Structures are given as C-alpha cells and as structure tokens.
Length: 146
Image 1 (cartoon, rainbow, N blue to C red):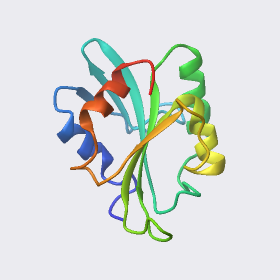
Image 2 (image 1 turned 90 degrees about the vertical axis):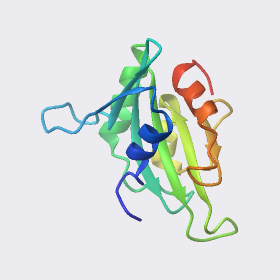
Image 3 (image 1 turned 45 degrees about the vertical axis):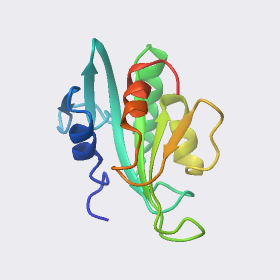
Image 4 (image 1 turned 120 degrees about the horizontal axis):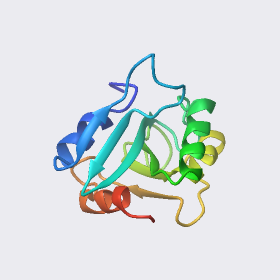
C-alpha cells in the first residue's frame, strides 16, 4: 500500500474540487485531531483518513483519534473517518472499497474493524475511486445522516 492514508487526501481533493480543504498536520495541534478540515456551501467538517487490507482490523486508529471524534460530535461537530479497504484475502480479495464512518461509530471501527456497524453509522462504496459515488459522498459530508 502506498501511503498511510491510502492516498485518500489527494483522492478526496480531486473528486470534490468545490470543497475547500485544509490539511491538518502539525505537532502543535491537539492529539487526535483529524487529517483534514473541509467546508462546502457553509457546512464544515473533519475527516480522518485511514487504510486497511482487512475488514477485521484497522491497525492505525489511535485511541486519541477516537476520543477527539467523540468529543467533537458531542459538541455538534461533523466528523468522519474515511477508510480505504484494499482487501488482500477472503472472498473479496482485490476489492477496493471506501468506508465512510460517522463519529459515533469510530470506536466500533477501532475495536472491531469494518464488519459490525449499526444502520446509519457507516456506508461503503466499491470499485475503487473511479467507481465510488462522489455525489453520495458529498451528500454524506454535508448532511446529518448516512
């Protein structure tokens, strides 16, 4: 896999060019602060980008990222984790999926991977970046539901 974030930062910027994106990579930011802040049509939010090769475990999620997302969501903020799953085994081997996970379900992703969400907590897209439904992803980022 090419980068820690599965190249999602660049992919989101290229497929959602009307969004204003701000990368957040600094030792001065608080622990757990997501990778990117976005704004579109007056709606602002945060995205943490991850990648995995298995639906069972996302190794790079840190407890402080879970805590940050939950605190921000409790304050009314819009927070998502975008996970690129390039599956390396099982019946879906070779699949390139994007999972959009709401803040309230990031703790579940941390402990159980991508296979145990309740309705409304996460949605997945298949077919790689060119096949992902960017209109729906835009709607997810700017609405209150999945």
